[in-house]
Image (tube, rainbow, N blue to C red; front, side, top):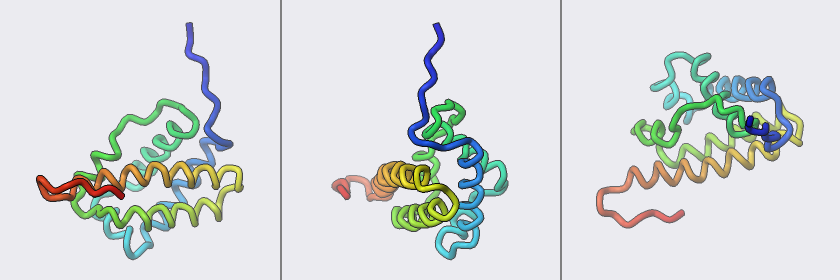
Length: 137
């Protein structure tokens, strides 16, 4: 028995995902806040963009093509602060609304923001001193 194919979360194609990721990271590299942080860690941009596109194809199209732990990766990068997530998400939304049709951009940005809340909270929790009460925001 084969597993039925799940429909996408919202209308998006692999090509749109790849294009959005490429356009977004082109802007990230130029961003005063995000560019230096990403520049400290990304050595091969095409490889990084393919990995992130696979993450989004998994999250949107259910392709099961991504194998990674983005929460752990962000926590391990000491220069990734919780505050950077707002800039990341705002830039992501700007690029999405400029390059994608609304029926794709709006739900994708909403999904990115939901994921971003969890990522930001995880990084914030990891940056707390040992024994400190949790930050609940």
